[in-house]
Image (cartoon, rainbow, N blue to C red; front, side, top):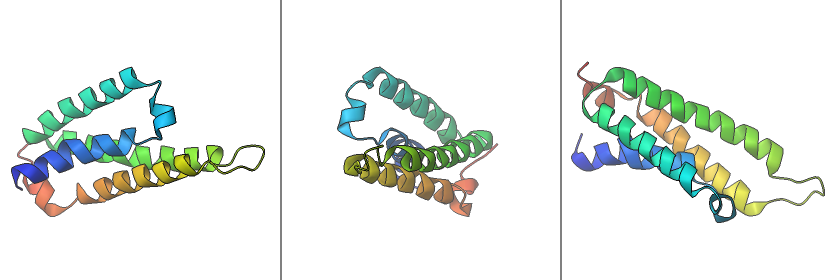
Length: 117
């Protein structure tokens, strides 16, 4: 894997998939987003060193994000008055799709071959 692919697959895409929410939701959560990016930065550094357990954990985190996104979309996209929250729906689908892609992509042979122990 190239350096660009490692940065994309080990840090950027997983972090973006988790924190991709509408700006109205993100506006009050800057500290939480910083913690999430720090978490993914540490996890990416461990993955870069070739730890296979970190890869398994990254796949698990992305899978949990997909499940949480589905549950949140089902419960909060339409309010009690029947109004659809379009930005939340679009950002939720995009974040879930990125996490689903990462979950499937990180389990491929070329990624697993970069893990040394």
